[in-house]
Length: 103
Image (cartoon, rainbow, N blue to C red; front, side, top):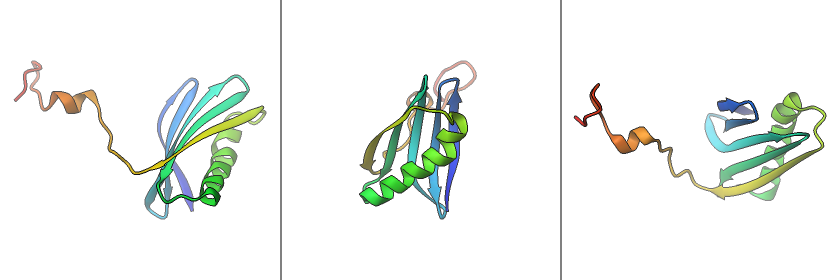
């Protein structure tokens, strides 16, 4: 069963991690622009066309249509690959004490 875990939400966008049977199978970034929804779907490198279409249908039915049921179009760009990690400014700064000086 596919489940979605929201990572972030703004007034015009959302980001979800896509899980299936305890494993991450992708990530979707959704951007709402008027009556059109743009998505960037990142899947595993081994995802075939049928798998991608299935993910898009799940995303459309369970995320997009519940947010914007009268949408005109759902445009999805798909990327296949492997996770490269998550990076933030805090990673570059390292551990710091309260004064901002590296420990």
